[in-house]
Image 1 (cartoon, protein in one colour):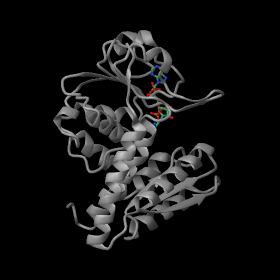
Image 2 (spheres, rainbow, N blue to C red; image 1 turned 90 degrees about the horizontal axis):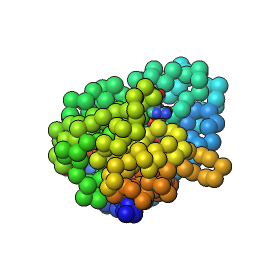
Image 3 (cartoon, rainbow, N blue to C red; image 1 turned 90 degrees about the vertical axis):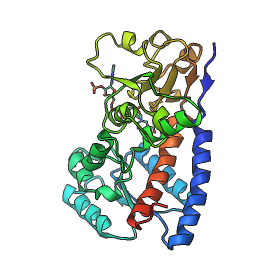
Length: 295
Ligand code: NDP
C-alpha cells in the first residue's frame, strides 16, 4: 500500500484564495484593512524566515502587516511596553510574538500581556481556556490548519482513536483539546475523537502509536516515527520541521511510513503552509470581532 499524500500546500492555497475574497469584501463593507503586528526579538535565523513568510502571505491576501524587529538585548519591560502600545492601537487587529524569545525574557509573561482579543496565535490563557471549554475565540494556527487539512480531505475524526506525540502548548495540547471537543469549526465530524497524548514519559510508545487511527507527530526529532509504530491504513500527520544536513525533515520517516499509512503529510509542503494560512484567517476574524462584525 502507498499512502495518499495530504497536500497541505494546495489546501493552504485554497484557503488563502477564499480568504483574499473575504478580506476584500470586509474592506469594502467596513473600510477597515485587517492588520497584523508581528514582533521579532533577537536574531534566530529560522524566526526571520517565518516572519518574512507571514508578512508576504499577509500582503498577498490583502492584509496589512507591520514587523517590529527588536535586538537580542531588548529588555522584557521594553517588549511589554511595545505590546501595550499595540494593544491600545485600534489600527492593529492581531499581534503575534515570534517564538522562541531570548532566554532572559519570560515567555509566559509576554504572551499573557497580549490583549486576548488580538491574540491571533491563541496562546493567551483566556483563549486556551475557551478552547478547553469548547467555545473557542481563536484556534492556534498549527492545530487549526491540521483540522482544515483533515476536513477538506474528507477525513473524519469522530469516533477515531487520535494519538498525538508531543504535549507542547502550541501544538500537542491544543490539538488534543480540539479533537476531544464535541464540536469544531469544521463540524462535529472533525471533533469527537478519543484522544491519547504521548510524551517522553510514555511507556511503550510504539504500542500506543500503533493503536492510532490518526497519528499526529509534533516532537521535533527527525524521522522519529518509524513504520513499525504505525497501524496499516492510519492517517499520519507530520508536524515536525527539523533542519538537518540533508535539508528539512519531518518527525516521521516518510519513505518507510508511506508504504504503511493510508494518508500522510509530506515535509515540507504539509502542515507548514497551513499554519501560515490560518494566521491570516485568524487576523481577519480578529478584525471582524473588533469591528463588531461577524458577518
Ligand atoms: P516542543 O519541543 O515544545 O515539544 C516536543 C514534544 O515532543 C514534548 O512534549 C516532548 O515530550 C515530546 N517528545 C520529545 N522527544 C520525545 C520522545 N523521544 N518520545 C516521546 N515524546 C517526545 O515542540 P513543538 O510542539 O513546539 O514542535 C514540535 C515540532 O513541530 C518541531 O519540529 C517544530 O519545529 C515543529 N513545528 C512545526 C510547525 C508547523 O507549522 N509545521 C509549527 C510548530 C512547530 P516532553 O513534554 O516530555 O518533553
